[in-house]
Image (tube, rainbow, N blue to C red; front, top):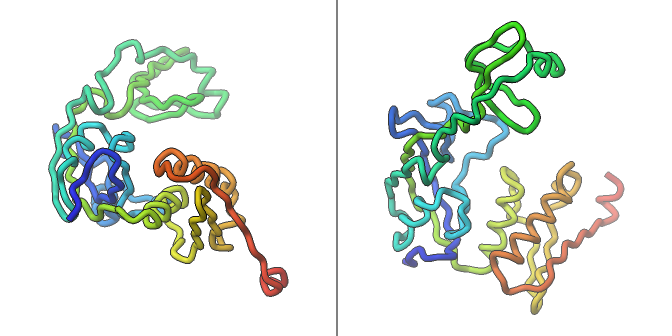
Length: 233
């Protein structure tokens, strides 16, 4: 079996939790998500693709996976400095109550709210101002990742398919057509995904991933073919 090295394409299942109370905050496993009140119908629960060195998971996790093999199970501790950082008192701020009125929200102590592009927890509420903690939910927390290595990918076509799947999660893309012609990758996605609202954005990210992570190709081409039957539907 192949050892995991820098640049390896790896699919992992994992459970991520806070070290203090072992409460789960993220997982790739549907049953564990349901057991811990994390389940969402909008998330695809399946082994997650990572590329070692790209920091799609904390660096500490990547480093501990180097040298491991497919089917290995690894428990990794991530100190807060390498996770979501230390709590920053300057991120606790007073927000005028009118800012909540603009979004038609009645602030309540203990609630998590989104103001602009920032998420924060309401600490206290007064008639004119609201004290909000904009630190990340996991700031200052040491973490534990329980990781199972499901697959180490070496085949180039499999790598390409995995990168496509990453940008279109939850979709069955096994019938995608992928051709390698010299320095070109030619991809025909299944027709059922071509009309997704975000498909052009997904294509752009797929092309960027292929250029940056495989480094064998100069051009990524997406093609579409419609039969007479397709046009009559």
